[in-house]
Each structure stands twice: as structure tokens, then as C-alpha cells.
Length: 499
Image (cartoon, rainbow, N blue to C red; front, side, top):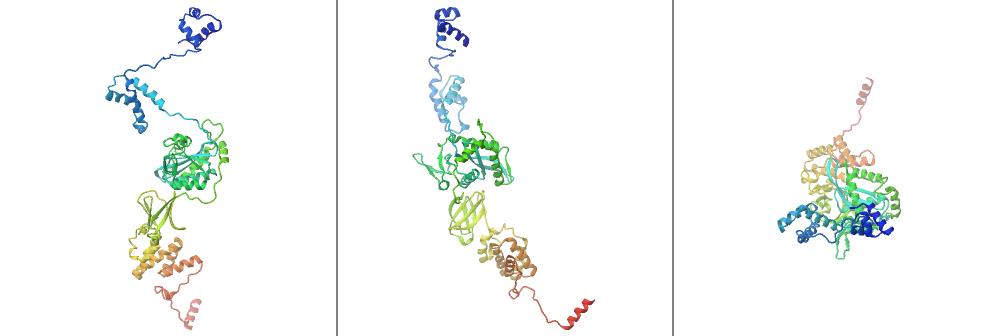
């Protein structure tokens, strides 16, 4: 191929100085066809085919390769054909006699043409994108899968991330509430994928039917929800990139924390520190661009929004309500009644009407029982024979004084003593454990071994007054004997004092 300088000299000789192409061919020692091409092109055009090369062996099988590559688009990424595997199938199934290189080149070009092209997007201030990602962390010494809620403001690239034990409705709602509080406002719109946490179903015209919980979130905070195309993560590429950034940066190396609360406090600090950095090719820091985002956010509405999943349930005969594969106790007086379960990230609250009947710490295992022993004391008072085998009381760690007073009550009163002990336990339904435990110890010191004595001692501690125990009501108390003082006794006392 001739250098550009040769092209320039020939073109000047012919086009500027006016010499003929025949004379230029003689002067430069080139053919007239080459001179003609140099006059047509200012630089060497390279080799140009007039028609694609013929492939007599591969040509008839090109539709077969096209069909294989089209089928690969819906196959798992790790089970798609390589060029070598396509070559092997062509030889085995279609008696292909050609070489591997021509197959490899065709597959490479075909895949390049099948790739999707994208339109650059602009991101005005005040809009957000949301997604979940997964990471691994160590929480309380246990290696745990973390489901990380990622909230991104694309204009500024300002992030908010929060980790949860599971990707659930309540985590989805709590993540929004926490992000709004973190930035101090609500975006004008939020872009999602078609997560089942937000979309109950997609109808024929592409309209999304929201889940009830997500509809309540939108109705309270009044942002506009937008959704990407099904299976097209690039529609919300900013938050997709933030998920990867979180995995590579915030969660590398593996985070260690005593609890999810401690981990999330650290993640919030990392998000704030990120605002002093620059993202991509931006000249401004994330924090400088965040000012425009914050100006465009709307204020957080007044009123309480509970970030929880609500499910109706029915209390069993054993005072249990099932929620997310686990059973939570309620007072047995609510047996067989319909209740509403509110599942929060860290708590399960059971209500009937406007009354909260039980509150438990949320657990994420399966087939576990979460008991509050106090829920069963009223029923045990009616059925004291079940006291020793009552499952809710098996893991109830009470101070040692309670077991001592139980032994004393049963040794003095028999069966009646067991019922009195249950009545003492029922004081824990109303009063703090420390106060009841202190009253139990005091009752034993006084020898007042009964429910009434313990109750009076508890009330005396609450009211900060001396206890008033009516001794006639407590036959087990030592009897006090009071005699009239005799002169001899008084004289004896005086002589003892003189000595």
C-alpha cells in the first residue's frame, strides 16, 4: 500500500499542476489505474471487495448457526454455545467439512450484530432508582447472606444502602422510608424493575398492577413510580452500577458487625463519605451535584407510615399466630379470634381492632415458636396441672427466688400452693420483673409465704411505703405474743443495764 505522501504528490501533479494521468503514470512509475484511484481518494482506501466472499461449505449452514445463537439468548449464560461447540455440532449433525476458523469468524460477527445498542440518557435532578443486591457478611459471628436495598439519585450519583436479613415486603418499604429520611425528602419519581414486591402482575397492555403494600407507599409519599422493561436491567443502569459498586467497595472485604443495626450505621457513614468523591468523568463531586437533587426533592408528608407487611390471621387453640413459617404467641383469651399481623423488619406486631395484643422480636428461621410466657399464665391459673409441662415456660429464665418460693408454697399448701405460685407469676403481667423478684425475696425473709403477701409487698414498693400485712390472713406467719410488763421484769432490766 502506498503512503499518504505518494497520494498527495500524485494528486497535486494531476489536479493542481494540470498534468495528464498518462504523464503522471510515466513520471511516478505507476499504472494508469493506480493513478486514477489516487485521484479519486485522498488517502489509501484499503482493500475493498465488490461482493462478499463466497463460502461454499459454510453458506448452506449459516441459518443453522443463526438459529443456535438465537436460542442461546434465552439459555442460562453458562450453558450457551461457544464457537467450538457450534463447529463440533456442525460436523456431527450436518457433516460439515469446512474449517474451524471460518465458523469462529462468522459466530463472532453474528454475535456483534446481535448485541443491543443503547441511547445515552439524561438524568434531571430529583429522580431516583431502586434495586436489591446480595452480598455476604458476618453478623454476630455468623456468616450471613445480606440483602442490600440500594437507592440511587442518578443526577448526582448519591447512594443510600441498607442491609436486611431477607428481601421482603417490609424490607422494601423500610428501605424507602430510611432513604427518604437519609436525604430529607421524597423524589419526584422512582424507577424499578418489575419486582414482585411492587408489581402484582402485568396486564396485556403493559400496565402494572401494584401490590397493596406498594400502593400504600406510593399513596402516602406521592412519588411517581416508573418501571423498566421486563428483563432489561440496563433501563435502570445507574442503580445496577451502584449495586456492583456496593458489592466491590462497601462490602469488600466481608463486613463484620455485631448486628444489622451496627452494619447499617456503618453503611450510612460510607454513603455520606461517598459524597465527597467524584463519580465517572464528572468534574463536580457527588455532594456538589447532590445540592441540585435535594432542591428538587419534595418534603416528607406528615403522618405515620408503617413500613410493614399486613396479613390477616386466626389465633389457634394454643394461642399461636402463624406468620412467615413461624408461630408467635398471643394471650390465650384471643384463641380462635381473627387478628391482623404486622410484619416489620425487626418485629412482629399482632393487633385486633385498634388494640395491640402482642409484640415479638422478628425471627427469620422456619418452623420456630416464639412465646411470651405471660400470655399463658391466665390459662395456667385455671389448669395448674399443666404448669410443669407448659412449653412456653420451659425457657423462661426467672430469678432463683421464684423457684424457692414455689417449693415453699407447695410444701406448705400442696396443690393450692401451685396455684398461688401461678398467681405470683401473674404479677409479672403488670409489674416489672425486678420489683416482683425483690418482693418474693422479702416475703420469704418475713416468712410470709403467700400470693397476698407478695402482692402487698409489691404495692408497697411501688407506692414507696411500709408494707401493711394483716397477720390474721396469713396463718403461716410466726405468731407474735404480747404480755403486760411486770415490775419484776422491769427491775431485772434495770439491774442488767447497771451491770
